[in-house]
Length: 306
Ligand code: GZL
Image (cartoon, rainbow, N blue to C red):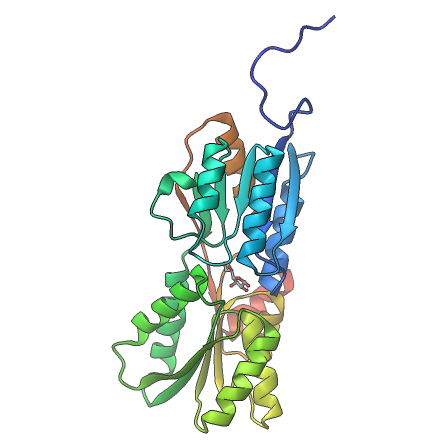
């Protein structure tokens, strides 16, 4: 008969599947749905994974609870997208003490101790904000422009960085002024509600800068309800480039979209296999993003994956 099986256990029990505990932010946006699909479609049994997946409804305490349960379960690897940047050191120390490697996807943490995670796979959100701001300067900066900003979730890396990037891109142009800025928590509903408030308080809004398509789509509803034409009376620039946003861009209701690629499943799978095999991994993997005006969106939409 066969021997007891030489060599180390690659984790995940005798089926030599790699057990992964993934804590997802929530299901707040079209981007998140595409990101979840990419992870669940890639970390499958036939690809060598036993995936445990949890949705935190955008609450940090739910993510910390999920990570603690994965530690108790003794998974081989923990991966998550931190809903906000801060407040992770304690639970990441617990994972480290349990000798369970952690991989960050999409959003990062502001922990000073970089040994708390193996790698961070995600877009450059500052660059996304700069790209959006540069388009505004290049296309609308020649005359006074009142901007209202729909921020993402307070304290989330994409919200912090997209705000900083946009501000740095417009700071040299005295015509462009951010006259109001508030969080819409990356959701369509809250984006609409905040935009309704902006419209009541500010009679002369020229442009909406929304940190994601979903809040931009909510702003469109509020602008139309106010009898104004989105994309014409009030211009709109957003980030993500998910299908619904790209359709609004083709329809002329949004003027420019900076992409944020949600298809992180394949990179995550590769990193996890390298970590489990003990191979060196890049600390930071930057996902490339494109940007779309109306013509580019019309071209890309038919074959868009998300
Ligand atoms: C960005 C991601 C953001 C998206 C939003 O990587 O964290 O969260 O831009 C999503 O649509 O809610």
